[in-house]
Amino acid sequence: MTESADIESVGELRRWVTRLYLALRRHSPSDELTAANSSAIATLLDHGPMRMGEFAERESIRLPSATALIDSLVRKGQVQRSADPDDRRAVLVELTAHGRELVAEARIKRDVALTTAFESLSPEHQAALLAATPALAALHAQLGKPPINNA
Amino acid sequence: MTESADIESVGELRRWVTRLYLALRRHSPSDELTAANSSAIATLLDHGPMRMGEFAERESIRLPSATALIDSLVRKGQVQRSADPDDRRAVLVELTAHGRELVAEARIKRDVALTTAFESLSPEHQAALLAATPALAALHAQLGKPPINNA
DNA sequence: TATTGTTATACTCTATAACTATA
DNA sequence: TATAGTTATAGAGTATAACAATA
Image 1: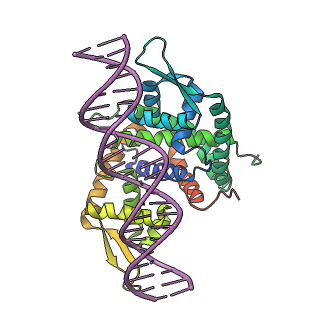
Image 2: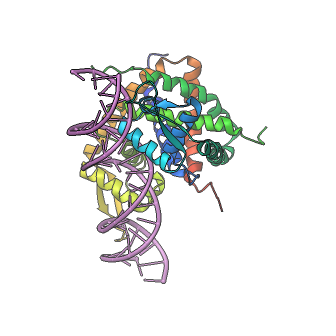
Image 3: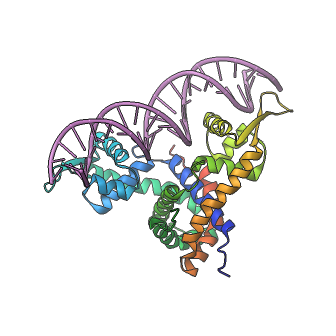
């Protein structure tokens, strides 16, 4: 039965992930932090000081985009750059104390919004979403590798 | 048990949806269609000719954004506008024949890539993802409304 | 020379405000 | 007046290409 994982079903999954992502991006209920900012800050919160290159890699964006993104967070006083003692070409980025506080609050606020929507779903749908979370992570991990070789 | 839908779990879900979307975008083998374009076209494909207002509503965007989005698809020859016979203020938007072909191909191409990753998952994960698809749609529908009232 | 990051520039997607044409 | 849509303009987030500084 695995001969075809039902490309239609997988496509349907993809379309809803896309639409949900777009809807989430629009919603940003925290006026201080956009979706991209939040993702960036979550990365810095979870993985500590890191170089621009590593940051760009983790966020799956290019270096110039990372520069711009970090710039905007520095302007807001949430992130700071510092010199890498081991390599004077490199830059270390990390949250400021103010950034850390604000982030924790913002993360909660945004998830509250999503949780409100979530709670209005049927118990079956809620359960299905929670059950799917590790599977989404696994699918992401598969896509993270170079699974598609367009030679 | 519903007293709190576990904000941590919902946040986790949100983060994986975001990451998966970004990974999908990286892989997008269709250079012709961006994510927003694909969503727009899927809507037109699935729900036929509709007025700009309905299109904007379905995509959860404002009318000027819909105008711009449709403009870009018209320029690529994938969508066409026509007059609404019942109301001369209104405009009907629909896929062109060329749009319909191209969409079907692009959809398949992209979904093949995703399906490859999908098939490498455990049967449990595969099942969880398929089971979650309608729930993702429901969550999207909830977010489409004005669920967040920061009054 | 190769690597790390920034600057310059442009494209996509979104928004609000002001406008046009029709109802 | 009210409604359907467009135009004008702006901001966020992304990219590629060219550059500077350091290794």
